[in-house]
Amino acid sequence: MRYAGEHNTSEEALIYFRQDGTVEKADARGHVNMQNDQGRQLHASAVEVLMDARGNTQQATLDGGLLFSAAEGHTPSTATQILASCSSVRMES
Image (cartoon, rainbow, N blue to C red; front, top):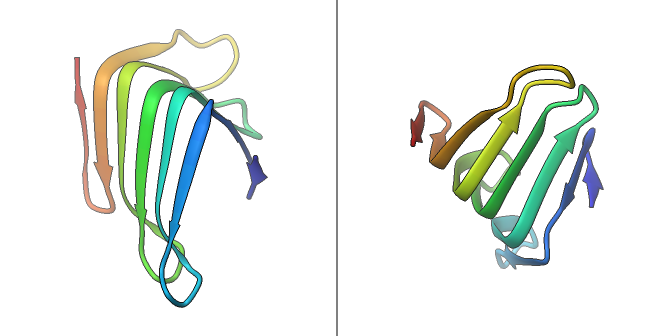
């Protein structure tokens, strides 16, 4: 899927909608890969994203063998789980 300058793929994705048609939650499982137009990449086994009624990300949980690269040529970072909210980010390894 390509959206707002990002390209995302996974083996399975479930999108949950509110009554008004806005996205409430997105779950992706199996070889989740995200890349933006600046070359940043993230690979995980599973991703859960909670959205507000305006489509803004409120919280994202990324799990399982995470690999993050800021751009091509940079040393990638790894973690076992990342929990990000609109006010904080926590990485556990």
